[in-house]
Image 1 (cartoon, rainbow, N blue to C red):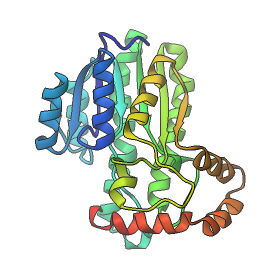
Image 2 (cartoon, rainbow, N blue to C red):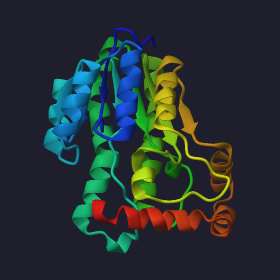
Image 3 (cartoon, rainbow, N blue to C red):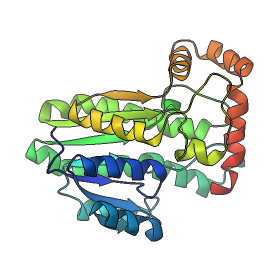
Length: 263
């Protein structure tokens, strides 16, 4: 899809990844609608990129439906909004579990269902889901987060089979550790030696490439992380033992502790 002249909705635009994605799409000629919970961050960003700010909390069904109604005619949906789900499952209340599931999985599915209907009618459009390498491989104390990202990735890849023949592209972008922005950065974890975090701009570039080239899936991570993810898919128990030896478990526990107050 050619980006110039298209209208894109970016959810979770108040976070560092959302901001990078919005700026990249604007440079490529898109008009933007940006959603997020924090008006103090969202409105200045919308002014910067000449877009429209739509303050919304995607953990609530009413706001999801309102966003879908007001953005029914967009050409591109970038479902980027997400919340941490790190930590032992037994430490979460029912309300906290519902919030993680609502933001990370239900809201992108429902926005796609509601906005995608018009895309299908037009026979054109593209949906990009910002998932995670946590949707391919597991780590300790992150079962809830893994569940939402495995679910989102599975939804995206299956939906692509249904919608691509009808003119609507579906892509999944899977970041690994990202420096300067995103959940890994906000969790304050330290990577093991030899592992390098990527930048928010790398995720934004992957979103652009996914749309323009109609890619099914793009991973955003350094080589050691991508290799580790492949091993985790092929041999989960072997990967778990390697993770213990190489320090991945320590990183996961640091993230869980770092996100404790964001549940």
